[in-house]
Length: 71
Picture 1 (cartoon, rainbow, N blue to C red):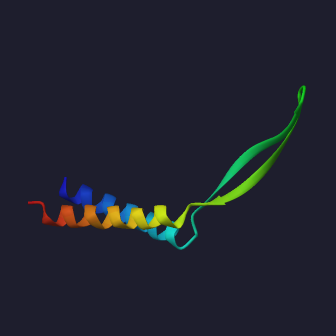
Picture 2 (tube, helix red, strand yellow; picture 1 turned 60 degrees about the vertical axis):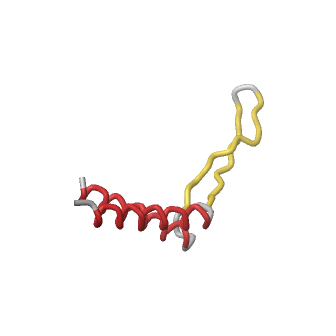
């Protein structure tokens, strides 16, 4: 259990750092026109907000510390 907390904390912190630096993006399809069977979509690229990245780093550090202090 101890190593599981540490590994999960490291992974979450790494994802948080990626989101905080703006390198974590995702695509979203948006339907802009639909007439009968015909539809037109636009693909938008979105970035994960920096505050979510900061929160992820914080949670990751807490998990690493909790795993290190557990006996």
